[in-house]
Image (cartoon, rainbow, N blue to C red; front, side):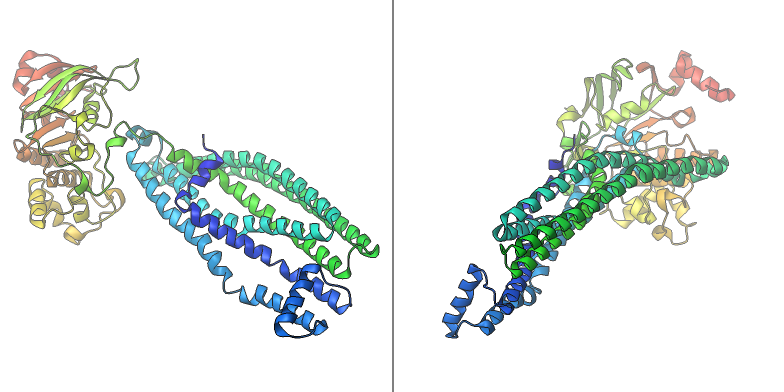
Length: 605
């Protein structure tokens, strides 16, 4: 569970300079109190009343040093000089001791924590992204980081120094009239205590609102991502109505539960503050009439108490602002505290050259491999398979038979419940994750494309590859046929998620990108299942060109893709039930024969 202490750790690397800058800003606020105090003393001098003992000592010392008599002119000169130092001399110093650090610290912290957030994104397990869409994640991070950044200058540069000023005012009034100071202190503690109690309750409401807003923003992100589907099914009105209901719920929540709460709190605060100000006025006036304090002290006490009570409003405003932002900051830290994947500890997030370098002939062995996402429903059961270097293996079977899970285990996205995976005799769990994965490559059914140039996407896995090798990979993957159709060739911007490319073009790009990392093991995961016949044929030709150059694993529903494989492995309910070539499995007349017959006749599986 996230605590206030976790919020403070956001600035841990800057605690030292934070304490110094906050202390300096607080001292400057306290020094500012010298002005109303000196004005009160000036009033005493002008009305021929005695100044305080401390001020009299200062005036006498100046008279001795300057060899001038102690008179009204010297007293006024000393007091005006003090005001000059506190105001004019201090003016160019305060921004550097306060404003500079109050912004430099959160801006540096934002850079650090943004990096940490990206680090967290890169090390979270894949199942997290199956349950949370990108809009929800990005929104939570952006809001949390922004609120941290904007809150620090207000807390460190305003709230804490203002509280220090109030404390300084209490000390000054205590020396003038302790009874008034005591009333002043009690009223402040009561007002702040009651306000904090109410703010704590409102923070809970803000957390609920933040959750509702996150859901709304998440759905909006999904609408944008799936806008073609929305339009295709003519559900624009349905989506608008759904979002309208959510927005109305948020409005009622924020207006009648949160904002109303803040207004009621502000009403109570202002009423009590004005009662306190009037009470201080009456007590100070009474003490002056009785002769307990001088006219100058009357002005000083009344001015300082008015300043202090006037500070309560911005203090309350800052506290309210913090309360409004607190929930989003907590949710940022909840995200940062999420546990990483099973391989997170082994992932190297430093430059790739720091990872261990491997080179494998490509022999892969699966030994008694078992795995389940849920202990009650095993996905893979006692899988034993040996793949020789540069051999092409095809994995086929019904949906849910465990084909894609096998690949996830090979990439170490998950660890097996039992058994092991060996590459060239080495247990992959003993290898450096980053270095190991750099020797593998995969072409998914939906190839992920970044919003950049075609060349950037091609060289994503190997940015230092020569352009000649890029051209060769494009020739093998038949991307060269696509490049001639693009307006700027390799420099064409392909758009977010590759929207300017067709499905077949994205698949070819994915194959070329995989080839450019020169993998020891290459996996095709349903690479042709969603393509038209012509595109599928092009991809199959590209795959045949690659076969024999590295260990290749093909996962496919369309059996036409796997006819030329050296070995076809049939999975059913998480077990290997058949192994052989295309012709051998057809003669066996088992599950593979049945799947082949159904596809040949066009019947549904």
